[in-house]
Image 1 (cartoon, rainbow, N blue to C red):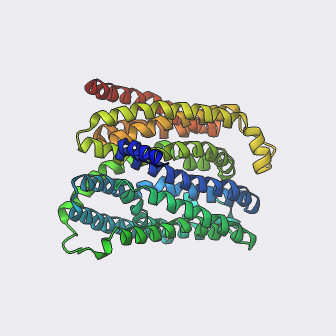
Image 2: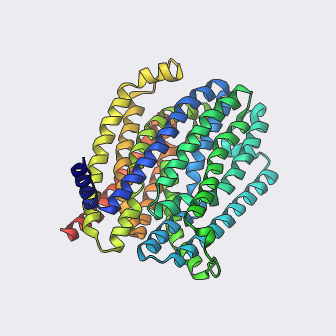
Image 3: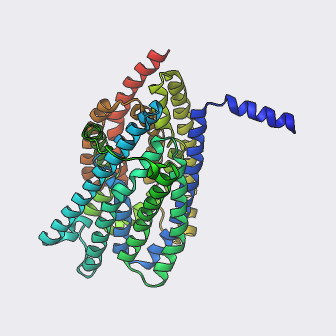
Length: 449
């Protein structure tokens, strides 16, 4: 027994500490994503059978928009992530406190400004619900109330969710995974209770999206206390140079985020405006299943971004390139097998999970499968490029790709339905991003060799 224990300790000592942190983050993230997946599987059918089809479509749209609006922090969160990684690598805790204070101040001001914009829109617009599509007269009051709740939650969540970027930058992303699991458990209890007691769209938005924000706030308080930040002196932490650097880096991330949002996550906007809320509600249910595949794969890569950044900052580029190659191949293989299985079992899933007679077309399933595979590989390459601060070249790719994708969605969706929206994303990515990344990484791999 003693020999085995000694052997185990010796083997663990040989494992790269950076890789162990990636594995720990991946494990906790899997726990959080698993909980979120279970929450989706349980709550989606309940909400679909309880809400009016149009209101269900609005709820699905707002849930997607909370992710779509990730760019609303002006890229500051990702700037904080990179600055946090650099401060940790150099052991400069005073600079870390400067980054945290500046990040929270900037994101707080952004949240206030966004909510002020919503208040102005809701009071000055003749039909403020138009942002959710063409809503029936009988549902407009309820949709307007839900939109107001969503705007308030978004404004609060912008600074509240900053803790996730901080924890990932510190290579402690397991905190985020655990908090997501707690949020999923609370949702599993709260959503059935709200629907059972006749809660409408606004109550559902407040419960589902508001719960995530509350958990983010609790996570921030717990982490800051555990890290000893409340016991540190915060004098002179609000630094103009740090804020300027965050805004400068954040502006590049902001362009990347908004381009990605319009390229990858604008389906809710295009489909609701061209085909209606009911069509988007049906599409979103199927899309969620394939996004779950991407979510599971991306969970394994959450810790890679700061790990790549840490390795490159310490001139350990060989490790970063080696891990990148293995991750790309592994992600593509797992995504291919998973999406093939999901597509083959889709008729059974629709009849036994949602209890509906219709099934998505094979064209839509093929398109969603193809994109899931591309997205899995892209997560690995993006993590490397972000960690290496290859931001400007990403901006060039993203702007060209998003412009083509968003434009094609408006053309192909009326022609081919929801399948056209997915095909538009695939075509644009194939024309712009894939050739660009082949060029960039051929140079990176050649330099390493």
